[in-house]
Amino acid sequence: MPSVQNLPQWLNHRAAGVLLHPSSLPGGYGIGCLGQSARDWIDFLSNAGFSYWQMCPVGPTGFGDSPYQVFSSSAGNPYFIDWEPLISLGYIRNEDLHSINHFAPSQVDYGSLWETFFPLMRVAHRNFLQNSLPLEKKYGSLDEFKNLHARWLDPFAKFQTLKTKNDLKPWWMWDDEDKNAEKYRIPAPWSEEYDFHIFLQFIFRSQWEIIHQYAKSKKVSLIGDLPIYVAPDSSDTWNNPELFQIGKDGKFQAVAGVPPDYFNESGQLWGNPLYDWEKMHTNGYDWWVNRIQDQLDLFEVVRIDHFRGFHDYWSIPEGSTDAKRGEWETGPGAKFWEKMKKSFPLLPFLAEDLGDINKGVRNLRISSGLPGMAVLQFAFDGNPQNLYLPHNLSKDLVLYTGTHDNDTSGGWYYSTDEETRSFFRNYLNIDGSTPGWDMLRHAYRSVSQLVVVLAQDLLSLGSEARLNTPGEPCGNWQWRMTGEQFTNLRNHSCGYLREQAILADRFREKLR
Image (cartoon, rainbow, N blue to C red; front, side, top):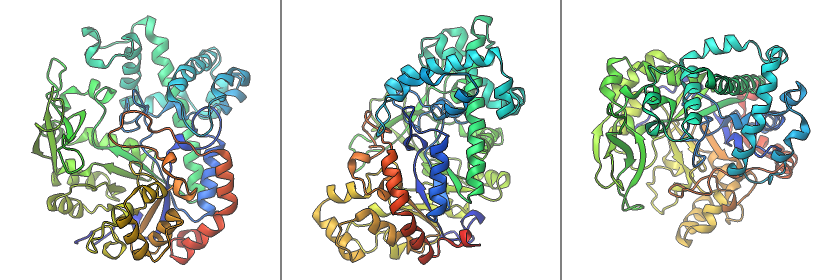
């Protein structure tokens, strides 16, 4: 299969990374956060020979808790805020956090978290309003932050304020006067709500920058994730309806999804509004340039989810109950990526090109100079020409043992059929007793420049630790690593992982 001839600079050396969403970090407060556990995790990655920490999108989640359906492409998830600095500054008392500290350490209870987190953070905000100096001494000027990020921050804070004003309904169900972002002004009774969301983003970005700089000091780069589509109910669509296939009445004219296939006879109806690509092109794709730049302020590399949509996309008429009535429409193609290459000449991107991919999609990725993806769990169907088998890989394919949408390697192995397990054992010449570690060792020895493994596989966990099951609306995004699991991993596996990285020449940058 053809491949990118000149790899982007970020991919010019062999390396390894781990996929772990911040929500899955160990610790208190009901969810992983940007505190000591994040620093400890970075220390582990560095000592074990990993050069990358990859995560899912870090935006503010809504109903369903999916990081791929967020209220803003550019805002951060307040749940990831570390409470410890706020305690030390006197904005919240440690005893106030009892209600948020009794959650189970092995999973995120989003319902209970939503009920407890925001009331507590509002207490911290009111204390901040009475005396902002200590916080600004720690994190810098709030006014400078507001000015620097005004382009996305102001619409997002307005959007969140209006959601509260309209009983958390999606924006197309708001009062008519609130639907029009261009004319909206914050009335006095709602100014504190607006300031509250500015406050949350100020703390998130400030703490993120501290963790980001710490990762850089340990030579660990961050890989983010950007869904091609934005959430229907988001400040992105509310503030820029003219850039989407949205009528003047606020109704979506068509929505995104994928057509019926072998696995799903009805296809997948995602419901995201589709772009007006002609309007995007007329505007020089400036909205996209800004959207990507916001991500590159947080990460060294950005994975572009559902890359296929730039070549062609499945357009489903609004009002459809499934994806059967959709049609393929032409995406922006090379014109879009020519603009991105001019705006981001180092091409710090990774294209998610998994699934039913045609030749045109691959040609677009390769001509754009972007690396693609391969998933080792998809390789063992018995076909020696399977593109994901190690002997068929190329350097420009980032090899994953599994992704956030896959089961853990152990869960996959023990739930798949015996024919697949037999091929897996024979191909890798192993007994199958430790499938996660078997995958890691063979992935490390592949030709792929970058290998990314699931954190759950480093813990030898099964299906109970799966992060997401596509198509199932409940029970996802909840898994967390416990403190005991992390301690065992750090104490017992770090040296072995480092050795494997050195043997496979994936530790070179660390040795310099």
